[in-house]
Length: 323
Image (cartoon, rainbow, N blue to C red; front, side, top):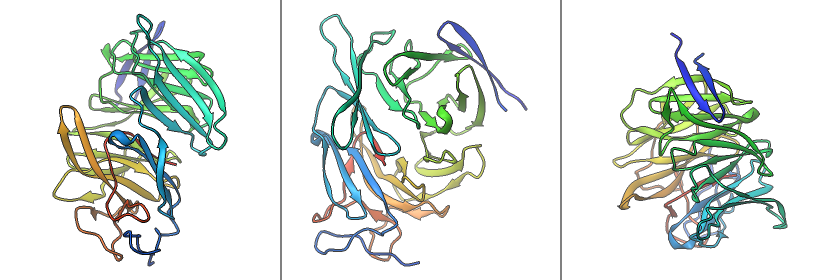
């Protein structure tokens, strides 16, 4: 049965129609590394230490972005070449957000501009499109909606509501290949294609507690939490599978660059008003259910994120990326 959505964007209204063995992990006392199949770098926000990173498979950790209360968020291009930062650059009566794209190797600035949201929100965040030509800007203000900019700051489109209902807080907004976007709204997952004036219902989610949607770089699979655990499903909404279990809550899934592993926030717990933290573990993305609450050892497929030379699992309380 088809489902219709009316999406309001700046200046006009749109219609959406549904349509083998491995190496052990270094425990801090030996020289072993992660499995050679694990590639890329994990970036994660932690307390007052700023954004940290750990490379794979060597497990070497360090600082990436020093702690900065003005940093709204960061992003890294899919090819790992560019870094995007969104910084609260507001002054009295002027609510600026400074977006900077820089070269990951040299640190040279590629693009930089000031953005002012319709609501004057200085806590806007930005995310690079898969081809690095666009930036998706999100906000926690109803009036701002989701804005698409060219990477130099030039306006492209803005989606402000669906069926007359403003986009909500804590909803997911993601890039897909081809510069499509996918967003969650109420109980729906919706895909919107360039030029962002039409889209399709992906899936109706009839669950009381679900969210934290993410997608692999190939654009073929989602991961999300439903209740206390992590699930994967195809981007067409089919093949939903539970892939984690424990006596606690899991959240914040992130795919490895090749999509063969998942970074999971385990033991997800509150730290006070609106604050949460979680411990980092990696599981194979093999469609099987993995108990991430068990103590791990060299025979386990559940891999705790531990820096080489340390003996404690890493924790995070904010943004996570695997590139």
